[in-house]
Image 1 (tube, rainbow, N blue to C red):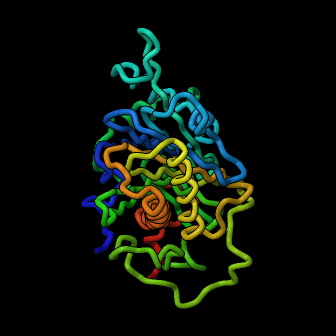
Image 2 (image 1 turned 45 degrees about the vertical axis):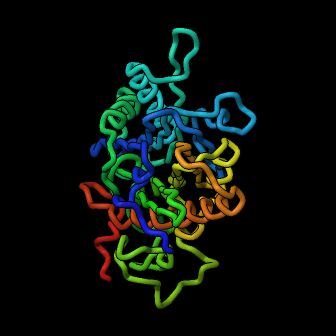
Image 3 (image 1 turned 90 degrees about the horizontal axis):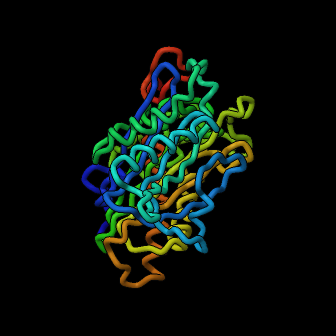
Length: 331
């Protein structure tokens, strides 16, 4: 028995989940939204030293509300937190949200990355992120673009453009795990000057070039970074159709951070706001919770590593870029 990607190799291979993207090429930024057909159980784990978040406190295992309507990843630093407001307003208009008497309150946690120094026009008169959040929700579907799209539109890494990535895995049990990530890391996704990826040992087929592992390695104790810019943070979501509690979702998010460490050098730094949400639709009961949770966590980590590499691999150039794309490298 083997584990293989789902038919799309996207987080939307988890049945019942949709993703919507919106971007503004002039500003060089964007928003990505993960939405369920129904509310889903969620957790979160923060490993970076400079996070920017909305409504993550309610995802703790001791809090009253265990399910959310959507999760939002956005560019824009603190300005980007307004993207979740645009999503919440649009969901309320659709009749979605936590019922409090006749009122509906959509529960929409979110996280942001810093993309304010990437060459785009940031001299907006009105914060654009509420609009972008609503547009991303309106664009939701099972298929969505990777690379320079959504929350990854203006993302960068130490030496190359970053982007939006996704990957999935169907376990022998039939449970599906997927990852969605906006890669704006302080560190690098490629070994030295590339083109091989740190995540190469986890690649399935040629999903990010099929170049295999690097033949030579730089001094890993002195990694290349964009520390001088202070313009970082990788934010992601792992999802599954397994039935998990809020505490188990938090453990899934924690395990998925290994994917950051496998795909980015360095990761979880004081200047990154590295964060992972976890989502569980609950369609499949666990048959043996201890080994099942172990395999789910490992699958989430490997999916995340692959998604990070796919984000950088799929990035495309646009006018005014501060950094080249992976595709400009000579393999």
